Length: 182
Image (cartoon, rainbow, N blue to C red; front, side, top):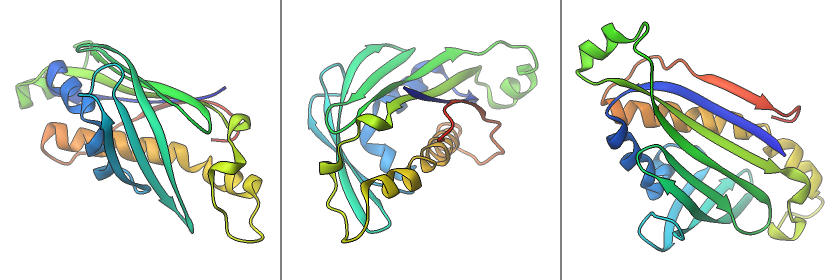
């Protein structure tokens, strides 16, 4: 499994951050390639299913995902339910006050850490999932699309922080990658 973790501090109440992240349909506002998130069934808790429509280059694809577990206000687990072995979670944890006290005083909010964790197995991706243009191989699409996962994860976290805090700032991201493809 390839793994990617993007984390940062956000100056907002952990309960507010958790509620914000539980609203999966809003994610289309943060991603360059995610066009729409439709709630298929559920209210955001375990068992909630979503249809996530992605568009890149000449390709459109609707992934099916499911919330597999929640631990309010600390964790939201999800998985992709067809075409690829993939899943992950959002983690929200109180951050240490070391070095963050001044920033917390400015916003009247204690900082917390937010992390997006993604695991996937590119070898499990189904070539039948995409309607590709003639003369375009599935392997070529994977080779071009997989590196986009990191930039998309970074973009989603940065934009979510902006909306959570209500202002723009340079967001320091910690990125962990356990893959030579990302």
